[in-house]
Amino acid sequence: MPDGTRPGVAPDPLRSPEADPASARLSLRWRWRWQIFAVTWIAYAGFYFVRQAFSVAKLGILDDPAVNHTLTSHTLGLIDAVYLAAYAVGQFAWGSWADRFGPRVVVIGGMAGAVVASAVVGLSTSLVVFGVAMAVQGLAQSTGWAPLCKNVTSFVPVKERGRILGLWCTNYAFGGLAAPPFLGWWAYSVFDNWHAAFLAGSATLAVVLALFVVFQRNEPTDVGLPRPDAQETTAESGAAPETADARPTSREIYREILRNRMVLTLSAAYFLLKPARYALLLWGPVIVSERLPEVGKLEATLIPVAFGVAGVLAPMTVGWISDRLFSSRRVPPCVLSLGLLMVMLAAFVPLTATGSTWTMVGVLAVIGFGLYAADALIAGVAAVDSGGTAGAGTATGFVNGCGSVGAILGGLLPGFLSTTVLFYGFAAAAALAGVVMLPHWNRTAVTA
Image (tube, rainbow, N blue to C red; front, side):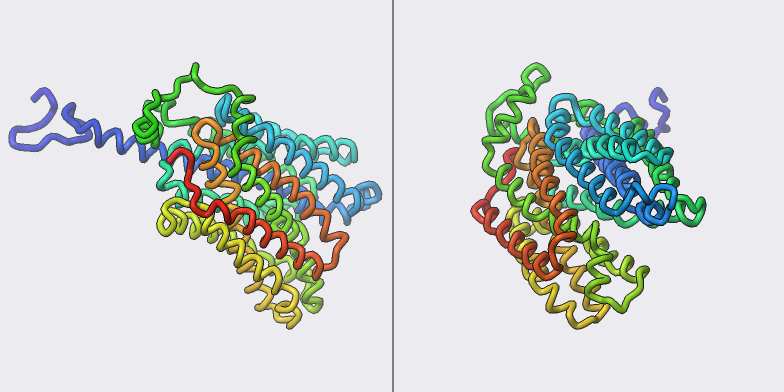
């Protein structure tokens, strides 16, 4: 037989020329959706294996007589501030670049820069080299979030975006959990040298970069598929599909984003939210040790893991809730998460005054859940929703840039304020963020 089948036997739908083209297209769409999900998830988690290297190396730097007279704790804190400032600046730029040139070129350039900057620091002991390389590292790291959020959501329809992006947002909580012990093992168990933390991180991200180059594509049209919401958007608006020549310029997109009230609201809320997250990320063991003076250094380092574990679960849960219970509205679950966060931040000092280790673990877990739930919605799916197809990267970058300015405060304030003042201040900031977002309770995605 011409098609290779026998009489009386149905043809194989995957091999026959009469195979259902709609079924084949559906299969192709699902394959690319999950391929892009996987490679972008790995890419953003991979960034953390370079980002956390400095945090891991600090222990060795401060104990190294060859450098600890110049790389003091105060100097390391200033280098952190330089890194975070560069990271904030980059957030405002790279999202719009991703909208204009596509995520691929931006992320590949950022990964390559991060690999080189980490390797340079790992091979140097110069204060000037540290400062310059960490500034470059901040700019390189900031290429990750907004372009990759745009990339993954380009393959996902709005009605499923909360669940998919909620699951995707587990990458940064996972990276923050997995990278420190991995880098610490190389630095202090294998080589007994803090330089190895930077070099191991650089090598890991180089492998991730290679995977990204091979498996990533910018959008469905690059692989012959329509955008997931193209038909609905065109039918509702009556507009013709967007063409390459019709794309707005970066300046036009930015001008539109700055007039978008929802983007400005998310930016203000994220600025208020992010100091609490970074204070616990950068100062968690110190805070635990202060509240539980009887625990040892290792235990004080391990207890804040509860904060990170809850951060892995929160985005998945809140993303599902926003799609299923609130019909793809992101503000209601975000406001509820901020309310939970406010209560637990305000209760942190009286609850941990009991001196109970398990109480501390529980409180940090609930704080982590509320904080990461709100964080994932504001910085991820709500920002993408608000930017639309053309401005998703710009909107996400702008929101995250404002949040990154707040992150600088999260690194600095714990060194100047008592834990009591700090946590009551964070509780007030969470309450204000919820109030700011409340008027947008019924807001839906602009692409819906």
